Length: 404
Image 1 (cartoon, rainbow, N blue to C red):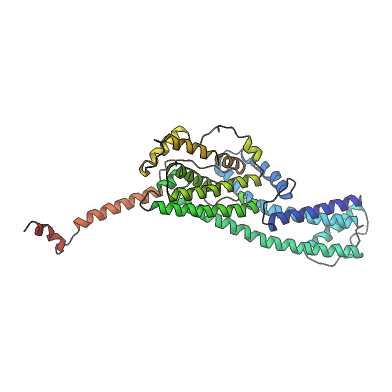
Image 2 (spheres, rainbow, N blue to C red; image 1 turned 90 degrees about the horizontal axis):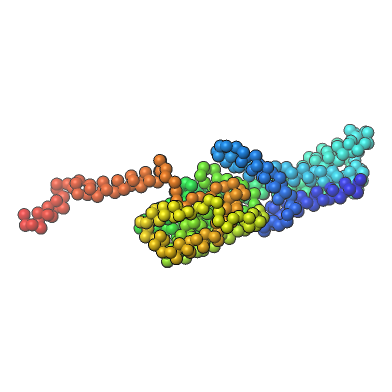
């Protein structure tokens, strides 16, 4: 019995320390199917999705999903602490409960376990009450080891939380800025259309360069801390996954239809964004789910009707897409490089993918501002001729030309 308790205690302590080391300290992708963090995610996320999908209101489902990230982080820390307390308690029990406890006068199994759990809890959280005294040298050594583990656990938690929320904040800044550049929710069509002005190519290339760096940061932070993938944006119609896929859609259009510096930057951004999608799928081990996807999806994001609508929206930009069969073929081919991986992540995280063409809105703030600016420009043009002073030399230029 005590040998089994020793084995379970060492297994719990080593499992927690190894899992915390891989999750928090090691700057690499966590590996292994039997990691505590992965088991915890499976036991909490899958039942949550099963129950939440039975709800009818989308807003309620989104609220539940948005709370999973922060709540699961706190629960995971609690699971680690509970397993450490239980593990060291099993070690103390294997040593024969070598403590002088005034409350443990019976000496039975449950009284000994209560004493061991109490000593383990007060030692791990460094309370040091001193009401229970170990009377063996080996027990004192284990108490010292647990005290050091408790200090390290608290230090990891203190350092872990700020790193997570700093990475989350940096991620959301670019996602929020995409609202004004690609609409809400973001779409590739709207992104290209809002950069169709004079000098828009430079702005678009700069934006794609920013998202290339953003994708690299996602690759660095979310691979090391996969729990960040569950964190959702604070604003409706926004998510890191929809923003990334919208940018990839725009890159696919640019790569297949135009030449020049913008297309070159689109290739770089596409490569980095696709890399992030693939590696995040590996973190959640979604390779089998990706293989089970049908060759032709049930809902095509770019159907024929949507494609013709896309051509109409981008007609003013003179992108040779509809009239070029090769461009269409290249677009279809490049979509197969990232859409299945994006769809797999969307199905797992319950984050919808963006459309190719935005749906019409009654209150489109961007269109209102554009109309106001167009009206102001027309008024300024008319006012240049109507509001000229009678004493201005420009009034008499016409008379001078005709000899009056």
